Image 1 (tube, rainbow, N blue to C red):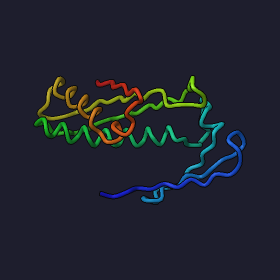
Image 2: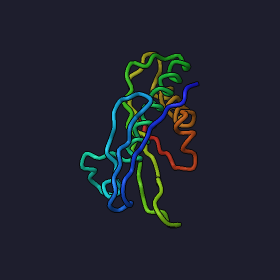
Image 3: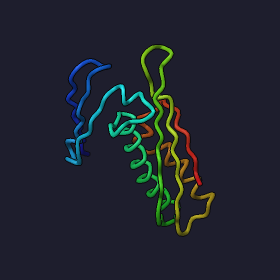
Image 4: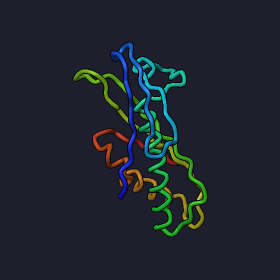
Length: 143
């Protein structure tokens, strides 16, 4: 199986510095990062590790859910997944990811609402990014 890579070049201190993160495996782009914008309510066009984790989790979850819907005998027509990743101060010092909320709605053929909910719950537990984030509370909202 492949290994995917990203690279960050950082200059300066945490409070005054900034960096550039590049998605090197795909070449899909590079993004500005800075701690003041990471910790602010408004990102001002700058990404953060939390946003990148949210993107990874939403896309991984959608893929896993589509597989599990098919395994349950349904056909996934469309899935709409959002991942909200929250950064908070850590009582032990510094910061930590305090939780992730996955929100999913979808249209499937051949699978009722209960079947979709069961597949959604199973996908939360079995998607590789969920597994990697074990220890972080992940909440699921299915509609």
